[in-house]
Image 1 (tube, rainbow, N blue to C red):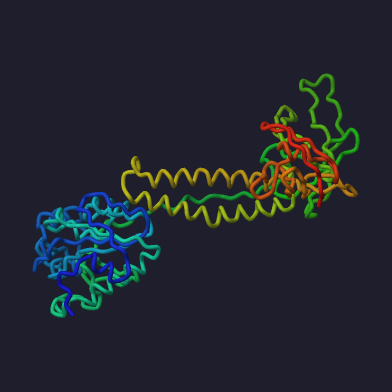
Image 2 (tube, helix red, strand yellow; image 1 turned 60 degrees about the vertical axis):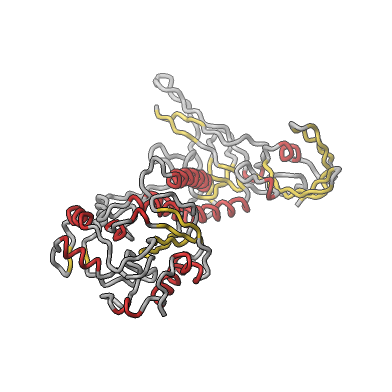
Length: 456
């Protein structure tokens, strides 16, 4: 069955797509999502309208071009290309994208035959006369490859039998400038070296990896050891420095040596050690936020960063978020940046800049979570107590009804999900209160009164 005169819009509608366009060649395309885009001529001459000067420029740009292993002349290369012209068919190119249709069409306009970027697929278009009169159609879809495969199948099935018989490759029948299907089949055109080879990235130089125990590489002691494990702070005997014990039993208890004053003749002063920290079982939000402390030992300063207090549920949420960000989100953002680079000039490439901004935010969040996972303390409920503490789930009542909150540290707070920080006005006011207590909360909007209904 012949479909001579059936254009891009008809084919798009035949496979269930809503055609947009057309726009003249060189004009911006409005598609901002994934989909299919098609280039057609206003009419299709019987022979290929090949511009010999453009073919010669292509050969000069890519002297590596070969046909059946031999370097062709301008006429030989033009003749090989002309053999794949489909007379009577206005559609000369069709492809799909999972990114922005508009961005990819702009890249197609800018492409130079022989270059690898920004749009090597479809470069046969650029050797044609009358390309300025071409039109671009497109159709958005969430399954672009499947839609393109259906479009190309409809194109081949409706081809005039005589025109099909004249093609050098009758197994893979495609529009003139389309050289492959989304399923991988390619035209047997025999032209190699027409596109610049991919740049080879030199392998990184060999490196030596030295594994060190957790902690700072220099000046590691009882104050900074134990990073990467769930720690419990143990109150020391009087006159001794703080000690730590790992929950996983991987390291025995260690006790710092008694502090002794430096001899009077010594040039340096005696080291100062932070005051003892209460046991973890008594940790609540009433303790100040972790702050770094500088300790001087033997003339060197060691920075001590107290661990972040988190609940057991909060630790699980942080670990799950870290896995999601590193294994799912990070590869997606990297792919977006790589694809956006192919669109051309980075100075005015909004997709590239948006992807880089998202990457910056993502990596910042990953680093923040990793800092907590390396150095944290799990808060435990004091035994035999019935008052609100860090980790409690509290039901409170006011004039408008009841609401339930979980009391968590500042790093876990999410009021929309029912988790309020111990540093918030409501959270700090509830700490230490029991069931039945009336609590006055002072907020920027005014005072509010709550009654504690239950504590879990």
